Length: 496
Image 1 (cartoon, rainbow, N blue to C red):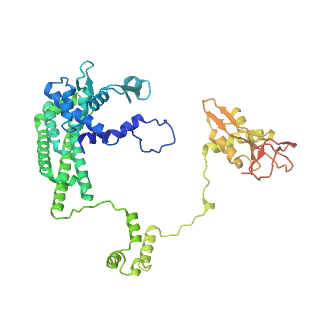
Image 2: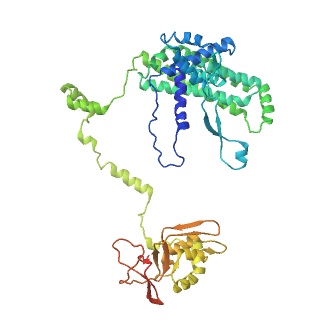
């Protein structure tokens, strides 16, 4: 796997996010495999990467001068002898054509106005600059940065130069850069540590085992150099001169800094180096003693299918059964006698008396606000309901939810849910008409049906025109004073 492949692995899913047409807020969150067009053989990608690498070498040699396409073609024909000029022209035209990228970032104006991250876009994505008259090409700043990034996607072998940056930062007094530098080294160390773990689990993984054996001496040298450099840096942190420089630097900083932050950052890298060295030594010892064997992924379903088609030999079957089955069947079932003392002691430790659940002695939970609301507004509400059924929109419009200069909307809704709070004879009637009401504070109360409180009585002969459950007996609404005037548009629920 080349450095360019590693760079593409790190950015491909980000490109998929950029090009995604998924609607924001959509509940369909499942992701399918992206359908990509192309030959799917890596030909054009390889040509582009080889061209960019060659242009970077020429950029250093000629001080960013333009290079003719014939020289590029001659270089690429060393790898692809039959490469036509049209293929090179296509790759150059594609790399020289910019594409717009949309992104978002924070800005001072958006944060002051309380808005989100501002939308931005850029078209500085062309990797190659092409002259219009001669057709000569060279790298753009974006292309130079891309090649540099690809070359830096490497392992620990080149992190020793990053460790030297710590000494340079200490010499210049740039203490804020030290944690970032150590984090880069730490990421490289952790990446190689995880790679060693995966190799031990599966040594056949992409030939990484052979690469580790070839570079084992270089890894040890790099780890030794990094460790020595960071030890020198930590020793400098303890000198009085550097401590005075750090105190002077900290006084002019806006954030709070402590010298122990730098020392702990260096200590984390040193601990990671010791862990990596131990894992590398263990891997080499396992290889030398033959404990590393090729292991592949086993498809157990396919293996079971093969065993059904062709049963194994009797000797192999007996050996497998003897190693997998228990020696005595009765040993797989625990006896109760040894467990009873454990259960009894555990129960004795937990509680010395039996637990008795008696709901009669429990105190009923009370809502102080609900109790005050019912005590103050209950009589008036009962008088109002005696006159005519009170629907929820009417109760909100009449202001029954306002109490003690506050809001008692939840307590008012409780009276519609639990009618026993006001009177045992109250029931709830449901009208199929939806309602929508805006309160004074801006809240909106909406409902698909309209509930009403009232002393409703049954009228078996009535034919209601309202919403009711299938198979339920028809009901109508009547007040005590108007029993002959049954309201057929409201259906009665069961008493709560």
